[in-house]
Structure formats: structure tokens, C-alpha cells
Image: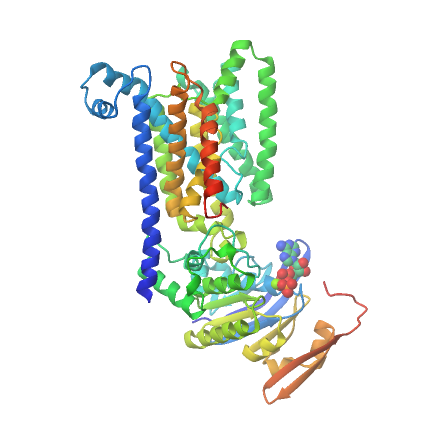
Length: 345
Length: 264
Ligand SMILES: Nc1ncnc2c1ncn2[C@@H]1O[C@H](COP(=O)(O)OP(=O)(O)OP(=O)(O)O)[C@@H](O)[C@H]1O
Ligand SMILES: [Mg+2]
């Protein structure tokens, strides 16, 4: 009889591995398709070949210099937002949470606006990085403010949410103030940045996002059981010997890193962080050992699909991907919600 | 195995004194029942022993080890604590919920040992046939059994259960308490249970501790401490206590009018 249960467990295990493999394959296909579309279109196979060695010189250059950074950035930022959203929902115990719930996006937006309006820079870095560094700095500052509130009042989800919302309002109004005084071109730049777009992607930026994503996901994976146990509620998790408050702080730090780094390079892309974790959860359940890679992959899928759509909807023009993702993601997500047999939260 | 000694433990919530210089010893291989009116501090007492809250003064000893000096991880390997509320949020299967009880031992890859114990405990409690159902879609009583299983899979030395059978039907109450008693004897566990049903306490507990207003009002064997006077002054009820050797049976009759109002 014991072997029977072992078998049940195994089937569940392999089913989840299967879903994750499917996600990974979809990700890969979307990435290649993303490399295919553009002013010079190319076939699936020729993209793969030219990715590795320059069979067609121009295509090779186009892929490596122009398309690959975007494609990688879409995958990585999508993954980072998916993971950040998952853990935000977990530590706040709230299905409506997203990486931006605690005002990180507002902080980042304000930071970017400071860079655009004043040309101010918190760190001496090359011009290309002025806006990202400022955005990152203020996004992270937002998180630290929330930590500070938590430190005083205790790290319960209520405190964090209420503190986060208050801080978000503060940054929103300061941002509005900056926008009010900004010149027309600057205002346009700020608004465009807030839409979220992949157009400023470069390989070094992608490498930075990759490093952060790899580090945080490894760190979170190593705590996967404890994070899973948080979903039983604070009282239960404590009874299992978990230091709930410390867990929240640690996870919040990883979320801050992920979100800040994602937001600072591509601006504010909403929706993914909210929805990717739900997609993964519906298919994989609550076990973080699967949910972490699942959410990363789902996030990558949604943003990649968005990136492709932003290029093909109006040929020749490129929409900000932040506008597109919701449009194509919402119907798909609603389908899962309506047709999915399992419950959602 | 471990003897739990509570020495002079006091605890405050904000300014409110909830535990007032509690003293008692819970022996290994015995079930100690904590009884008392609502708000007496029973749950709080268990929380101090589980190191979920720290006493403001006094000390708890596991044998000679001071609980205040023990690391959380060590405590969680020694103690299983079942909280009073029995909600299970999250999309977790019964199997997963029970297995999470083994968290101090779980590796990234679940070991054979963990699976084996999980299955064994679920069988003992008769919940193996709904292993794959979602825990938040169970009835209140079913959930309670699942959580008892979660507390047992850790194979603890000290087992703390806060009203583990309050939502169960009469048969399940007996069955689960029977099982807990059996395991307590077999493994020489130190088991402390909060119970509201005085008859169940009398049937299954080796010792009874009566808490009232944060103080130990009486302690001892059930037939020694449970009598008409104690019930009248602790609970404010008129009751009849039938005795047959060491067996006793409490028959509550009516609440007594007391001008103090409710104790809480
Ligand atoms: N988190 C809290 N903050 C402040 N006071 C609390 C808190 N938890 C419990 N109390 C108070 O401490 C006292 C003891 O509570 P406790 O939960 O230990 O009672 P109990 O004996 O378990 O009661 P019950 O039989 O109703 O479960 C009560 O008066 C309660 O109001
Ligand atoms: Mg209680």
C-alpha cells in the first residue's frame, strides 16, 4: 500500500514536470518567433542557424545586434515579473498582489522622472544608464521604506499593504508634480517610459537581469518548502517552526531586487506580475518547487507573446509592449479562470 | 524523551496579564489535559511551550534544556503544535498539507521516509482515501483531522494540541483521542491537550490542569480535581459528578447566577 501512495505522488510529480516542460518549449518557440518577425523577416530554421553561425551575414547581424537583446529582455523581464508577482502574492497572502502592489512602480516612475526632468543622477554612470539607475534607486528606496514600516509595526500582510499603498500615493503625487513642471518633450519621455517598452534593451542589460533572476530564483528555490508553508496562514506556519516575519523580510528583499531591476530597464509593464503566477498556480498547484519555475516561464511566455504582437499588429511601427501585454493576456487568462476546473486561490 | 516543566511563567498581551505565574510538569508517556473557561489562557499557554510567544518571566524546561535558549529549528524538531483555528487556505491537497508537517526534515526532493510516515499517519487517522482532495474543500471536521495528521507526522517528542477534536462527531472524537493516547504511550511522548469536554478529559487524560483567569486553579488526576465545588467556582455551573472508583462522569445541570458577570 505504501508503494501505491508513492505512485500517486510520482504521477503528480511527473505531471507537474510535464507542464513545466511544456512551458519551457512554448517559451523557446516564442523566442524564436520573436527573432523571426521584423522588417527583415526570416524563417524558423534560418533564425536558428544564423543565431549560431553567420550563414547570412545581414541576418546574423540583425539578429545579434537588434533582435536578440529585445527577445532576451522580454523573456527575462517577463520571468522576473512573474516570479516577483508570485512571491508578492504569497507573502501578502493576497491574490490581487503584484510586483507593483507596494508602490515599487510608483517609486521607479518617480526616479525615472527625476532623471528626465533634472538630468539628475544618483550615481556616476554612463548616460545610457542614467534613467535605469535612478529608477532602480527609487524603486529600492520604496521597498526600504516599506521595510521600515514593517520593522516598527510588525511584518503582517496588512501592514505591508497599507504602508505600500500610502507610499505609492506619495510617489504618484510627486511624479505628477514633476510632470506638471516638465517641458513637453520631457513629459513625453516620461509618459513613454511609464508605458513600458523593450526598445532600449541591450545585451549588457539583459545580462544584469539574468544575473538577478538566477540569483533570486536559486535563493527562493532553496526555501521552497518554507514559502509553501506560508500559504497555510501565519499561525500554522509558525507552528511548523517557521520564522514567518524573517521569511517575509527575506522574500521581500528578493522581490524588491527583481522588480526594481525589471522596471528600471523596461519601464512599467503591468499585468504580467499579476497574471503569470495565477496561470502557473492553476496548472501546478501551490508547491513552490514547481510554482517558482512555472511562474518564471509563464511570465516569460506572456511578455514574449506581447513583444511579438507589438511588432506585428501595425507593421513597421512598434507599440510599447506594456500596452499590448494586457490586451493579449487578458482573454487568455479569463479563459483559464472560466474554463479551469480547479479553483484559483 | 522529554519532560516539560513550566516554571513561574507569566505572559502579557500588551498590558493585559494572560498567564500569571504558571507552574506544572507534564510527564513523558502521559496526556496532560488543560481545561478552563474561554479566555482563561489555555491557547496562550500552549503557544509559550511551542515558543510561538515568549513568556515575559519564568522559564520552560525540556528536561534540563531551557526553551528560551533553544533555537527555533530545534524546537520545531522536538515539538508539534496544533493551533486552535483550523482553516487551511491555499490550493493544497490533503497529502501536501500533511506532508508539510515534516518541514524540518523535508529536502528539496522528498525522501522515502517522509512519504512513508505521511502515508502511515494518514492511514491511522483514516484520511488516506482523500489524499488527493483539496484541503480547503473539506468539511470542518475533516480539516481538523487533516491538521491532527500534520501534527503527528513530525513524530514529535512533545505534542501540543489545542482543541483537536472540537469539530468532530462523537465517534471521531473517541477514535482520535484513543489514537493519541496509544501513540503517547507507545512513543513515550509528552502530550498536552486543551479540551473543553470535561468527560473526555476525564476519560483520556492522565493529569488535568485547570486554568482560570490565567492562573492554575487546580491540578492532579482527573478524579482528584474534578468535583462540584471546582466546577462551580471555575465555570460557574451547577454540576453533578458521578464517581465509580477512579472513573468519573460530569453531568452539567445549569449555570449558576454569579454577579461577577462572565470571567472574560
Ligand atoms: N493576540 C492577542 N492580543 C491580545 N490579547 C489576546 C490575544 N490573544 C488572546 N488574547 C487574550 O488573552 C486571553 C487568553 O486567550 P487564550 O486564547 O489563551 O484563551 P483560551 O483559554 O484559549 O480561550 P478559548 O477557550 O476561548 O480558546 C484572552 O482574554 C484573550 O482576550
Ligand atoms: Mg484557545
